Image 1 (tube, rainbow, N blue to C red):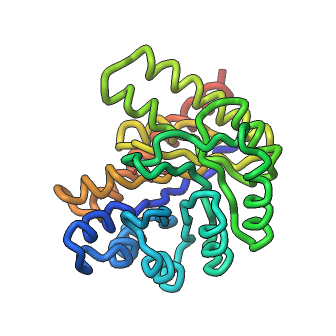
Image 2 (cartoon, rainbow, N blue to C red):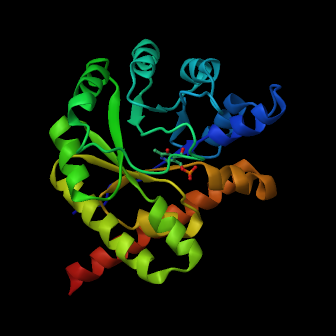
Length: 260
Ligand code: PXP
């Protein structure tokens, strides 16, 4: 298999979290997005939550108007968000589950259990020319459901694996990585474009970048956190380097297989 390039989508939600903590205009998510692009982000991701806890309507509208790279709008599969997406036409929309009380997107979308309600949402967004991805757990039933729904892409939820790595739970980390690998292979087999995200840092992004099917990582919290110590541009440069190392390891392994 030829190695596909891997894109970095920088999620700027938590720049808005910081801004909203004081109710003013600083730091500005659009300025952060522009800085991220200058530092090497291939795209910008922003989640317009139903409770508007971080990104707000005017943020997403400005990002859509001003960005020179693809905007990926994360959204719940609800009529209000579909209407906004159809009006703004971001390059991509990632459908995520939302619960008001959660700290972040805690689980994947239940594409298998909610086929009936998701079908018109996927259909309408695709009809608007938006590249739809479904944020799902690395579970074969969810991948099959995403393919059946006609979504062009899935984003594999790496959160459980990342948490296990950070906690030093090697048994869970090992089994989750096996699930992620298998889900990525199945998704590609079903013709889906494969993205991944949630909880990634330099080390976990490097590991995921070594999976040949994965062509996009969406990373937010860690990069915004790193920006406090090294600056956003440097954090993005380090993340890109980690992703390059992952891809290089993949190419080296493929080369070894060919020469054997
Ligand atoms: N992908 C999706 C679908 C998400 O919901 C999130 C969190 O907003 C991310 C990626 C980024 O996760 P993190 O902020 O942990 O990097």
